View 1: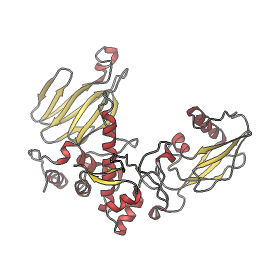
View 2: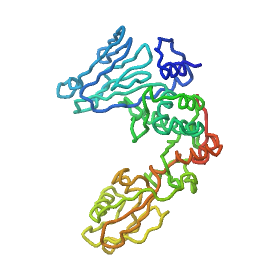
View 3: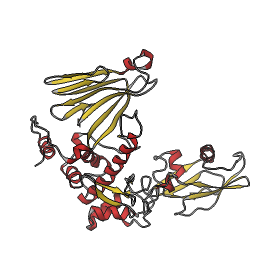
View 4: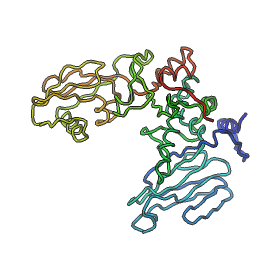
Length: 389
């Protein structure tokens, strides 16, 4: 049994965790820095046999037994002339391998960083080895009880995305984290979110990533449910990503319409105005003129709209970007009613942006007997699975 499996077993069984010597693994050379908190006035970190290193004064101190360390972030604000830019204040580790923040236990190291110029606050960053990160992520981004092959497919996609973000962060000299613990990037948990199944999925896929035909890492996107078909990145975010092709038929995610959304004509004008400001619509439109929406089709990627005498195509993906994921859960929807003067009624299916790995679909394929490599090849047909560590 490996060290990580032993720790999981001890915690899940309620036994006391004894201090053990760290065991090196290939993934130890691949660490990820995740911002787990932002804009805090005060930070409190605790742990057993805690070591605190203060970077501005190059000072290290180790505390025996249980200890709490507090930081007043206001003290490091620009107003107090202590810092003009974002700086690394402190790093904290524990002899047990677990550090506590916000009543959660994190593996690896916690860093306290100022939030940036003119902000009297701090961020907290968790730095940990990649496979530990993936094992906690699987319990948040996918149901830990799902088939192991689906979990393994998710592990490879999430690892690829994280490593791609790490590469981008290295280009920013002042970056103190690689990605956020949020739906903006990826959601991961703490130590107690890890299960035997998520740990197993992370370990069995350790080092495996997705690369394009040029041999480069590709951001591997994923979502909850595509509703029956996936989309390319350029259909959602306007930027083309090498190696992506849409999957036309995701049978395990193909279900009846499952959400509805209604917006007023005035809100329709607001999204058109926003699209004009962003440069997505280049025509100059007078929004005081009459607005007419043409009949829609289920699989169409845009709405045909007439403003006065001028016709435009408004990308459907803009609605989710502008109104948010609560009002528009997915990018797969159609116009059900709105050809007249009243509110505009949309009906859709699926949940998420619809690009890349469909989690509900991958579960269905795993139940069918597909292994994780075949599942990934289905959703990323132009990408290759490679082991990098």
